[in-house]
Length: 291
Image (cartoon, rainbow, N blue to C red; front, side):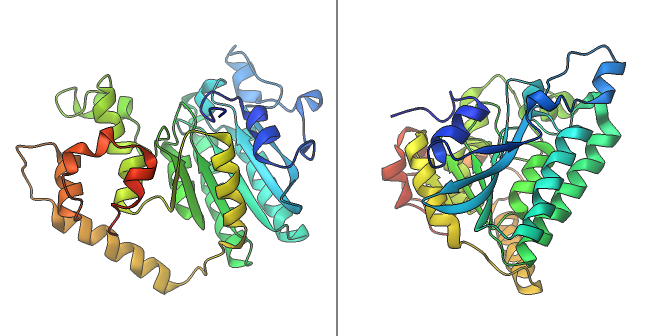
C-alpha cells in the first residue's frame, strides 16, 4: 500500500493514472510563475504549485490536475487558477472521458488575495460549464493539507467527491475559524476535533463525500475508474436537493449542545453508537451511512 497523503502532486499523477501516460502542459521548464510573488520577494515555483495535463485511466483519455501541497499549502493564485481554468476550457473543446482534480489546498493565497479570489470564481464557473457539457468532473481529496477555502467550494461543484479518511474538506480551515472566532470556539491544534468536523469520515456520513476510500493510491485509482461515468445533470432539481440536504442538517442540531456536535450529528443522522466512529476503519464505516 502506498499512502496517497504522503505522495507529491506528480507522484499521485504517476500512480493514479496509467503508467507513463501523463503529458504535462505548461511544465516547470516553461517557467510560468506568479508575477505577484516575485514583486513581494516571495519564492516562486516554476509550475506555480499545480501540474495540469492529460493522461489515460484504464485506457480512457482524461484531463488531470494535481495541486502541490508543499508549495504555499496548495494555495491558489492568479497563474495557478488560470492553469486550472485553461485545463477545464480545453476539456470543453477536446471532450475527454472526464476531468479529475487531485485537490490539496488551503484556499486562496493571501499574497494574491483579489487575483486569487477571481481565479477561484473562474474555476467554479469552468467546472460547471464542463459538467453542463456532460463531461464528469471528479475531485480526489486525500492530501495532508486538506481541501479548504475556494477549493472547498470548487469540490462541491463537482460531479463526484472521492475522499480518504485522511482527507479534509471545508470552507474555512481550522486556523481561519480559530483566528476569527477564538480558540474557545475552535481549537485548531485539537487534531481529533479537526477530523471530526472536516475529515473524510464526517463528510461521508453527512453526505458531502460520494466515495470514501483508504489512504491508498490504489484505492484512489479504483475510485477514479468507477467515476468515469459519474456525470450528473446540472439542474434546478439538483440544486434543490442539495438545499434540502443542508436544511435538514441545520434542523437536526439544536441551538445549544453539551456534547460534541459532530458525534451528536452522526447520532441524529441515524448512526448507531456514534461515539465509536473515529475509531472505525473505512470498511466498517461504509455501512453506517444513512443519507
